Image 1 (cartoon, rainbow, N blue to C red):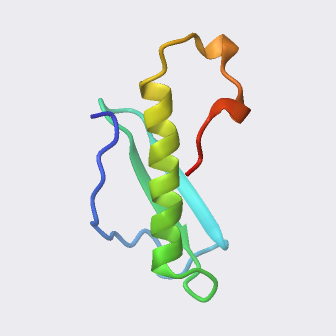
Image 2 (image 1 turned 30 degrees about the vertical axis):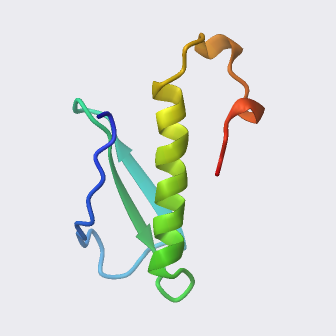
Image 3 (image 1 turned 135 degrees about the vertical axis):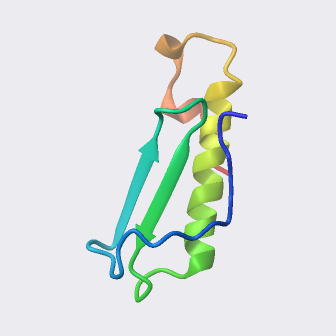
Length: 79
């Protein structure tokens, strides 16, 4: 698929430089994302929920049968 999900943890920084940062790499045949977050603010389960929601939204784009020109944010299902 276009989104590969793994539970691989990589440490880009020892300490998060901001509360939450997301980097998405689209240079391959699939998307690869990295979430870096302050563990003093977010729980791992919260970030996992964010990732699940993000993937759900991306899958809606992939399965879209109409043109992106007519797409409205209100038409997306977030849950």
